[in-house]
Length: 265
Image (cartoon, rainbow, N blue to C red; front, top):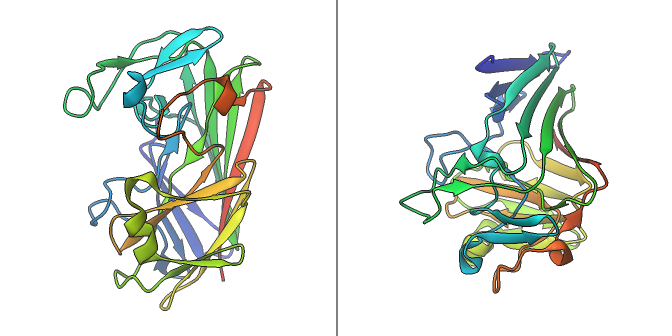
């Protein structure tokens, strides 16, 4: 597949770089909005969480479904699969991951951070990722195609570049959340429910409007002051029991579509 793809908006004021399906840069009016690999905080710029969000270690990494058990490590096996390039144009790009039920996938967390060498899932699925760059925004759409009745969780985990001073504010509904408050929340992240958009307000640079469709919840995470993750999620995981079943997951209707739109103001 093509290693890197560059998208340019029609007004030439926005540019997006995609590396093997991962959004690694979004420059708007000469300002980089995305956290850069190699900077403190995280070694990625974004990733998807599917079909599980959160840790699974307390449940021996097992997830119960009507088709039997799957073995999933933290945030699911999708991150262990590689994207295939599908198509691109000046302003659009499409990538896809596919999985065959029961296929054992090597777990990158093994052996340092997990006892499970392989992870697997008892359902077939395909996962398409669409990028669409317009003059005013970048839209990322996720399309999941599976058999009806498959339980799943979906989360998107993009990281945004900050000043490093911790002076940014996240506006959500009628609340304002500071970067220090997000850091204090720790590894569990800072969840808000029944929320479809938030604003990231900066003292220096462009403010970001982060609008979602289909997820209905957003959580915030960081451990440093130079980046923050705004993460839309379908469900917040049960961190106490880490019990995953149809009762606390979504049930697929066959084709499920979710999207995120990033714009500045």
